[in-house]
Image (cartoon, rainbow, N blue to C red; front, side):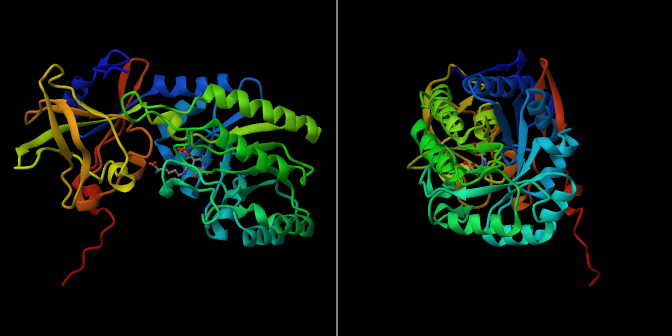
Amino acid sequence: MPNPTHIQGVSIASLADEFGTPLYIYDGEKITAQVKTLQAAFAAVPLKIKYATKALSNINILKVIRKAGAGVDAVSIEEVRLCMMAGYTPSEIMYTPSGVSFDEIQEAVGMGIMINLDSLPLMEQFGQTYGGSIPACIRINPHIMAGGNIKISTGHSESKFGISIEQLPLILEAVAKYKLQIVGLHIHTGSDILDAEVFLRGGNVLFEAAMQFSNLKFLDFGGGFKVAYKPNDVSTDVIEVGRKVGEAFQEFCKKYGRQLELWLEPGKFLVSEAGYLLVKANVVKQSPTAAFVGVDTGLNHLIRPMMYDAYHSLYNLSNPEGKKVKYNVVGYICETDTIASHRELDEVKIGDLLVIKNAGAYGYSMASNYNSRLRPPEVLIWDGKPQLIRKREDFEDLIRNQQILEF
Ligand code: LLP
């Protein structure tokens, strides 16, 4: 895809004038289109999309996703509350905790939210408290190594997530002991998964385990579709996944004797490419070994390059036809803070606007105040109009909760 200068007809440069930089920009149309693509890919099965809230949790984004016809997966009670504020009904929210306190589980149950039980002790406690009165899901660890890198692989045998498939007899024991009402089984093997085969392998683990449960309503395949980060990069062929997994799922349902729902929990697929981080060049400097562009953002706003060695495409919006120069694009945080290494860009001058792509997923949601920097505003382009959906932080926000002692 060519580097956009406009989103839904709105000039990106004009957004810098109106809202300043750094600035997170989201294309609401693109998010809606991604939901529709996934719905079409899985049209042959009763599909429920449960957007992984953690990818980008601004309430307005959650509203866009609900409008497109998807539900949500939340991983904290705070995310559950954000989803409720966005208008989701409890039945549209799944809570997939990872080792949280039982108080939080009780709070979610009290709100009428389904819990995805992720450990045997939690199953015990849940059974002791509720018996079979509350329908629940079980998160299985299928022992599948998948995903772009080890930090984002969650379904392998050494991962903290879920209950090992090898412990299925213990799961069944707990279910029988407390007469638990298990209505769903869940897996999530990782993020940046390219191959349909991985989803099929996960499916086979689910299908086999599912035969031991008589009251299932859905099987949840988790998220993890890979999106394109680099120019000419490959992304998961969701049409192929939909066809292959859909067929296998329908086969299974026949064997199971009942039509179940197929759930998916995409994060990146729905929002990654819809997001842009618009930044400004503060510094351009040449060292004996490299040319550096220093921008007015850093790992405090977009941690993916430093945390996962993630590649984010970026381009010079201000000088689109400039001569090509190789740069290290670096953030302003006072530690090694590389956004892009040895990257060819149209020549950059101080004050030029650069656009960092794929900033929708795990961008703002992982942002911090490190170096006591303020978080940027967020703008949603909706119906061809830019709307501020989160203000830029100010110094007051930074000190709001500090108690200043008198010495
Ligand atoms: N479901 C569950 C239970 C998850 O833990 C996750 C992501 C998803 C769904 C959505 O996965 P996605 O479709 O976005 O790949 N911060 C990392 C990604 C961590 C993902 C954690 N779990 C990154 O920026 O690459």
